[in-house]
Length: 63
Image (cartoon, rainbow, N blue to C red; front, side, top):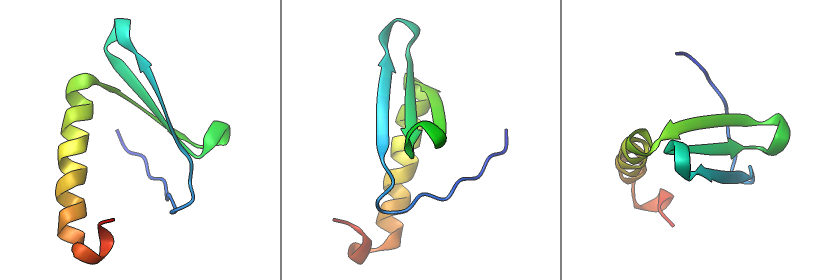
């Protein structure tokens, strides 16, 4: 799979949890934005990877 999308500070981020299918849909930028669908395992991996990336950006980037 290959996809690319630029998200800015003000971009909306919404989440819809599908409990019975063990999937989460994350929408960046509203109805005309970018959707990411992931299982709970994939979502955990995404959070872990994003946490590492944020820490590598340095203290100035962390709120």
